[in-house]
Length: 199
Image (cartoon, rainbow, N blue to C red; front, side):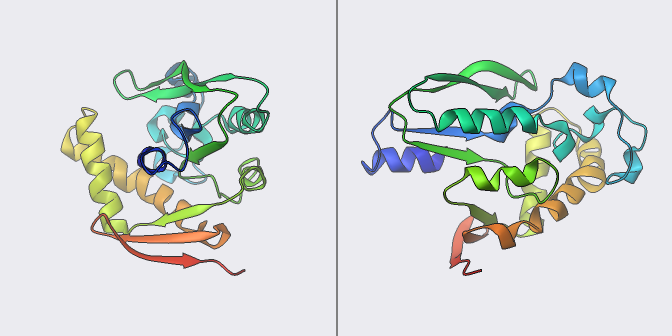
């Protein structure tokens, strides 16, 4: 969101010319996650548990719908109304992000947009430029703990979740850097370096 705000503030795009599209809005609903079970392949401690226990993992998103909506965003003759995640209800909410016909820049954001896995690997072909934000794992863990606490998790429960689920997700995401066009490295939440991928 800050990038879109900056682009608007600098006059690079006008108020209606850019939109932020977070992957979070494509979480499967909690009732669906409660019905589906984790097979334990990537998250052995959660085997047989409802997918809701690993919410935030790749399999807890509706990647097919996300791909369909990315495709639809390229058709500037049709206005769209897309979902966004609500931190209060912990559910996606429909019709929260408006993509008008004047929009010429969609900033898609999410952990798994460069994931080399079924369906996810199709996202890369939909994007004109891919930027990977490289943050030290210690900072990721600190940010996750703070977010879980804001969401109401007790600290010990939050730490267990980080170790059993989030740490695996961090490893999954870190393997995606090689597929990015640009790698932005941050330290202590400040820009450290920018690297252009020549491969």
